[in-house]
Amino acid sequence: MNTLTAIADLAALPGPIAIAAGVFDGVHLGHRAVISSALEFAAKNNGSAVVLTFDPHPTSVLRPGNASPLLTSTRHKLRILKALGVEHTLVIPFDKAFAATEPADFIQQLAAACPLRQICVGEDWAFGKGRAGNLALLTALGPQLGFTASGTPSVAIAGQPVSSTAIRAAIQSGDLPTAQRLLGREFSLFGTVIAGNQLGRTIGFPTANIRPENEQLPPNGVYAVTAELGNKRIPGVANIGLRPTVQDADKERLLEVHLFDFTSDLYGADLEVHFRHFIRPEQKFASLDALKAQIAADAAAARV
Image: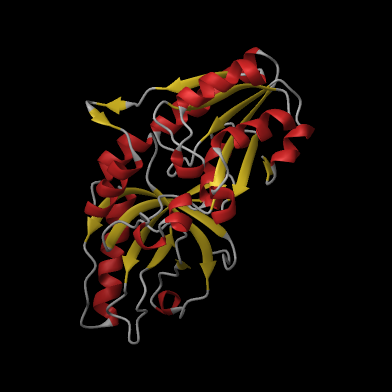
């Protein structure tokens, strides 16, 4: 996937250009409807579709003390977009100076940089200084700047509106089926494998230790998972939590993943861990033998 970091870089893409713009945290079904509009326009007009998003999340800059936990880091988001068939992304660095940009000026910059023919947004999306930009402004600017504006209505599944807020609440409470339904995919955590204390190796269950880039984590416990490594999906069992049985266990929550029938070194590798279902809460065991026996039982449950 081609990732751009400046508006001027749009000039290198073949037109006509359709831009799907938004924060897209989680890349849920509502986001995917917006993105699909841009992909369809580009396909019909032999042009380029670009997903425009921001890094970091705007609320982390504008309201750092009141920012919601992220469902997807930027790296994770780009990974999901690539899997959806997105070929071009524009990740605009977001800071207070950029936040002060007038909405009309921002759109004029996009139109001046490329043969912009369509902008696709959620019908209630707001952007620019004071969040004064909206679908009405895009619709008004379109005829002047040569593009049409497409506003995608909110999506609901079984009567439940799809939103990042609803998905965060479902994940926090451990309601993975609801999260999966609203995301349109299994909930996943993404991060780089870091060095651990290698205790798992000594008891026959080597684990990959990951500090997730996502901020919104499910409840502590043991889960059946699959780990995506390159183009492979490897089943396994995962624990997320504080590892209370281990002496001097970490004070931060970590994700430990034991991959079935896998022995390669994963240090430094990026893993996306997809959560299939919950097995049990995290607990402290009286001995390593008791922990080993429980991990064996957990692995058997995860293989089902």
